[in-house]
Picture 1: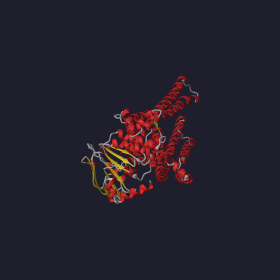
Picture 2 (picture 1 turned 135 degrees about the vertical axis):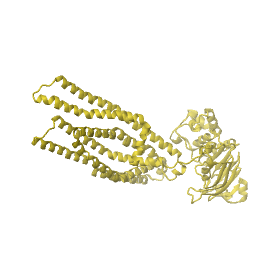
Picture 3 (picture 1 turned 45 degrees about the horizontal axis):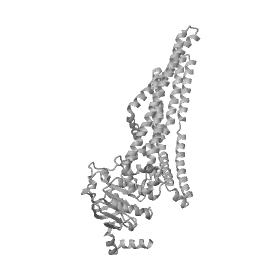
Picture 4 (picture 1 turned 90 degrees about the vertical axis):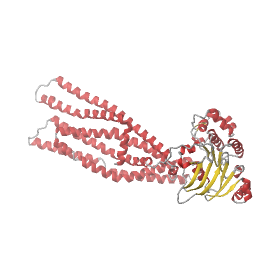
Length: 581
């Protein structure tokens, strides 16, 4: 019930349009349901006298016949307009939900995504909101609301015609309420399992699309298919469980009750007729039968819609789990970066607080200095950068930028003067220019081109038929690794950051391209604080300070020559790479 109320509360997004659509719906249903009363009048007051050899005014008969046709036509036209309005409301509510979940995703801390596959999150934003649109809001606005209005109006008319018949038919309400509660209780697990397996399948499809080349190289097509088939079978089993419950508690119950009621009504009329006590006219009997038939047909429609609505509640629960996830708290105070001086003061951190990956990290990076971070996989290099960006916050110690503790300032302002080049650069669909400027209107086309040329992209640029407007599709798969890296470098340089982070930035490019970038970086990093994470020690020999990490601790620090003289871990790593080279 809580989920239902919350889903209904989103009608506030289209409050005016929904109210207008509901009013028109009521007018339309009222007109259609009053039409049988016109038939009753025609039968009792106009046609019956003809059978009794009494005269009737033909003009009156034609007038009421025209009235009946007019009421039906006008009611249907109003119903058509109402349907369009309410369907539009459903679409706009779904759009609002989709935007809200997407916006919420961007406010979640990075830690939220650590243990959640991308397919499950995207499924909630795209698939689940679309299911809510089609199965809840469309059903609610165009069908459930319509049927509920019909039921209310028919009950009102029946009570006016005969209060005892109305009271007897009211017994349907508790029967159907109990039916709905039993149905909800029995189906909730099957529906939750269904959507869980649907998300799992989405995740597997994403993985296959992203890693198709690796899967084929290692001959994993069969194993991948078996895994997909297994998930698909589980999804099918949950569907079968739902269908089984639905079949047992199906809408045929309503049909059965309808037959009993109609049989009882006919038996009652027959009993009165045989006893000479029948005081109901033919027109009134027609109205009774017509309204009872309509009432049960409408209730049957509502019952048939219950499985769809129930599916919506399971979907809504998944969407609200995302919306209710705690957003990361943030300060409203902007950090004012001047020189880009970075200080780590006795910083300790763990993704799981009980297992620290950084222990008592202390260093200072002055303006214009290049700090290199080296160490074996898992030593804590990337974690230092994650803390600097405030993707995570340290459990102990402080990180300062220009003397300001970054945990006291707005995350966006902390990152505003930082630029990063990743090991595997990501390009967005658009053009080379849009990937460099990142749609920042302050960066002109000339500045974007200048940045690309500075990092050594002039030859690459000359090969593009459309120059800097060359299209980028599918994460830049039509470009080589080196070209994607150069564009990523240009993106960073164009933003003119005070702090520059190169995370394994030269590991995926050839030696010639590496030399071009190294030369460009020697020029560009002047006056900037630069952090370099690298396994290839040949790229950091000119760093002002090299920090050697081991198991989350800084075990050595100094220049390239100082560390070679020390003859410790760094020297050992350097000699091993020299042998491999």
